[in-house]
Image 1 (cartoon, one colour):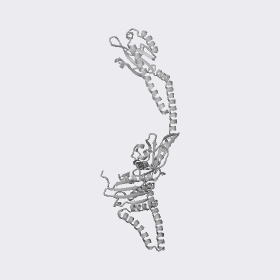
Image 2: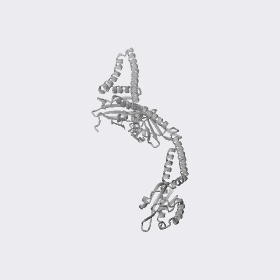
Image 3: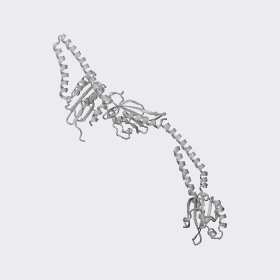
Image 4: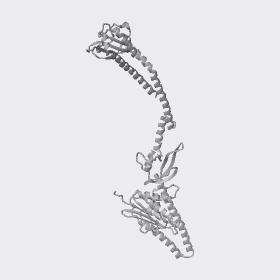
Length: 499
């Protein structure tokens, strides 16, 4: 600011000096022209004694106008008047050729009084003939004195401008320091570079929303996890379940998109007791949830084997006791009847279901349901030649979650039962699970399919959401109806749509 003010002051002084010279030129031209245009001047110049009438008059005008000299002369340069009387009658020193040609002009010339700005103009009679010349001038010394007389005002203005600029700079600096929390520009740059590097390298998604709902910061991981395009992001651009999150603190809430399972946490941004927005942190739990699903399946198989082993031990003890009592034929009948029933189900599933993982899942769920007091039936029309584009892992997720939900729901009835149908055709895969539970309305089903549920919430919501995720991935449908029981039907095209 000091440099700017000093540069402005230098330009002002230079401009003022130039204006002083221009003002002096205009003044001497006006004085010389006014004298030359007076008819009495031409008469006096052509009289026998021009000095007597002209000298006192020119001195009076000089005193009034403030010029340093007024010289009236003959065309041959002979002076008729002068500020210094001793120079009257002597030749005028300076240029007069342009005036003799009828032109009024100004020049800077070193004359008898020193350097001066002077003007020369012709005197003409009534016939237009040049009968004399008038020169009026102001010395450089007087111009400098006038300039220096006005210099304190300029300096005062410059000092005032400098003070205002300094105060403004101090106030602006304080305001900027408050807004930047006291950090200097280099500190801000360093912090930005470090924070930018951290935000782009962390493995969690991060979205910072302002109070207007616009995202002020979105890192690369958040765009990847939420499938966000480049450019500005609003709350409405997020997946549906995230759009309706309540303001405030959210800890580890589970949300599902079409392709991912996300754990979302939210914290408000508070500064000086004012809420500035919200910070969303997003973690990908897709692979972990898949592993947990497989672990649940293995655990279910283990529980089924444990219960079967326990049941087999009971049957074996029964057969041994019957043999010891001599009831040999009854022992054989008891052992073979139960074996034929189990083997029949195994043979039927292994013959009609060509996916080993699904067949093992269905067998395990039958035993698991029986242990919980639920009768689980695999319908006779169950058969799977190929699941089309659906992988074995996705098929286990789809069927396993539907059966688990049905077993839990059927326990609410007096006689719990579950019926499962899995079949495919050339165009679609159909999974239908019925149970004796109260059923689900369309609103409840939609809520379970579209909302995220907390990790502390009942797994029913997550299970249905995982089912919906598989169905939506292949553009299938999931419907709920209440007929002979609560019926959930998942239909998935086995071939890719041409549209």
